[in-house]
Length: 65
Length: 256
Image 1: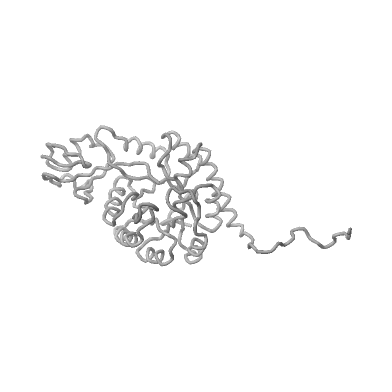
Image 2: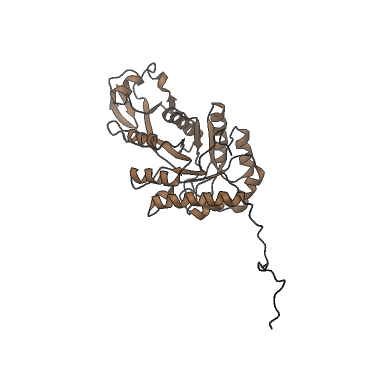
């Protein structure tokens, strides 16, 4: 399935958001996720089914003012 | 003054961006004896894990973190970013920025009030980056904010406190609300001035990070906020237009 991860086109095998996080190597990482502009909490990733063309955002801590 | 029930160890809030290296950032935070450090969120590239290294550094510093919504221009973006920040940083504190104008980076105060209302109702403790406008300040408090963060000058400009009258009026109108000058401070003297006005804290980033020696500048800011706080508590004299001799005239010999 083709989706956008942080605006980059990717072909992924995962069917859920939790699966995607694992596939990208972020299982143990401190990250947060959003799909199509909507925050998806960690607790909901396992139930969240991915669909073709979805826009996934994965963010992590960064320096800020 | 308490910030949502928490007493900060120092009135100096320090941003973590733009330092020459992570080591210099750590040393600057320690020299500043910062009461809070601000942090943000950005996209994490698979395989790079830059955010994970930064998170480890923040944990090691042991200073309370205040995540921001920097770069957000809409209510929706800011609210979603706040939710992501709450999960990542495990805090309900959020420095709410809704930017309205690209040249001055001044807040969109209409969007700010709306986002503050949404986030406050969802249990966030909102630190709104605002202007010194009294009416906007009233609306923010009505929206659930218990702290106000007016700008001194545009973000990163280093111009200091541009509207002393406005900042003084805000302090006088809201004697019981914690007030923080956020943005525009360029020199320790600006920070001291904010504390002398009775402000409860200052938030500084560029002035420390972009100094030739950020660690020394961090210490200078620590001393400045300490001086400013002491001066405010010591009840400064009133300024006057005409001179007044400080040496007593009584007993002066007649020599001419």
